[in-house]
Picture 1 (tube, protein in one colour):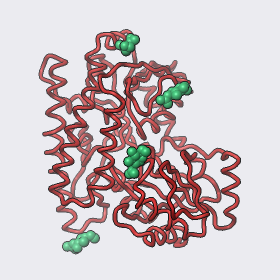
Picture 2: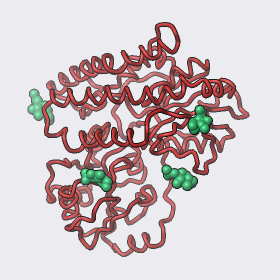
Picture 3: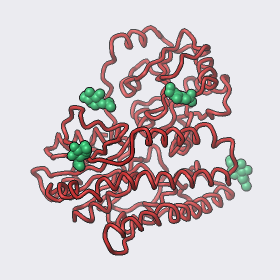
Picture 4: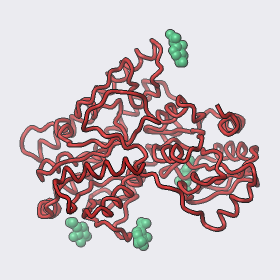
Length: 436
Ligand SMILES: *[C@@H]1O[C@H](CO)[C@@H](O)[C@H](O)[C@H]1NC(C)=O
Ligand SMILES: *[C@@H]1O[C@H](CO)[C@@H](O)[C@H](O)[C@H]1NC(C)=O
Ligand SMILES: *[C@@H]1O[C@H](CO)[C@@H](O)[C@H](O)[C@H]1NC(C)=O
Ligand SMILES: *[C@@H]1O[C@H](CO)[C@@H](O)[C@H](O)[C@H]1NC(C)=O
């Protein structure tokens, strides 16, 4: 991973046109996107750059009071933390528990509602930057050399345009690669490039190809109608002239795509698209003493690590009991990151933790398998440390990520809603014992 990181930093240096270190402005982000961004910022600081991160007053994951080696530029927003938490909870509920029981039409109706709500929320956050004279004045006077953004929150392309500075994206994916294709001009022939979120792989039969073509077309309509229309209206109002958000996104100088060929399939791309999946990977450090003792007590059988990611801290009691009884049936010791009520069926081999040092555990020689929601950060850590996975994917790119890893032969996948304890137990045993 180190050479890839250096390439990325080198690129950033070239864009700033300076070897003495530039002034980098970083767009606000959240959850796993922020977890991924942090080590990149640390590296930029190591290389002599000055890094300033925009953070809004209701952020759930970014904390400007936390000691850090980069600076924060806090701004106020009219949304409360509670309103954002409520949105996240509804979002998770839909994707984790409701979606699998609905048909395609019902899913789309709810999905469009969520996109609309998300647009409203994210544009309200953007008000805090572009409609605040104080902040815009500060940003102009900051004389930044470039803006680095994960474009899941809109507005970085508008702000880079207003400030007249280069823009670098760090992007995991957009639905059906819409932003990359339509705005960034990256080719994606539907005959062999599976659309992001389609759960397809590079091996498609005729009907899957047809589905892929329709999937691209449908997502393009949804994104145009429910995202770009709103964004264009907003940007045009701010700029005082008709403005296309997609065109501004297309002006990004470099796209750092958080995917890689150990995870994705061959596809055409452009020279300003750099593939940096796993950019956050680090060697494992040693574990806290009591955790190390528990890990060592597993003997020859080793351990299994279980986490559903930064957003999902608990599951329903029913699911927790199914999971716990599956875990009780395997010979390994299990470290489960879980904040809910202790399941009744919890076995003596399983320990619950509020938080786990995931990367350090994945790099531990006793680790045999990783049960994961399939978020890209964890998947790349498991690839880096060579740990096979059992996926229980829920939302966003997770089902797609696990379909990729399964196709590559490094994972089994089960469904949170439909699995039995036996399904989960067998999946774990398969990835541990089946070496092919
Ligand atoms: C933010 O960081 C400060 C300093 O480390 C800490 O005291 C505070 O509890 C943190 N806030 C949140 C919401 O985590
Ligand atoms: C945000 O609000 C606080 C409290 O009202 C105020 O002190 C601060 O100056 C505001 N920050 C900005 C950047 O407007
Ligand atoms: C294509 O593959 C899917 C998934 O494996 C399968 O369900 C479907 O029957 C196949 N269709 C044809 C025409 O072979
Ligand atoms: C998870 O815990 C929160 C807070 O304790 C609770 O409000 C929520 O209903 C729980 N979720 C599930 C799925 O049980």
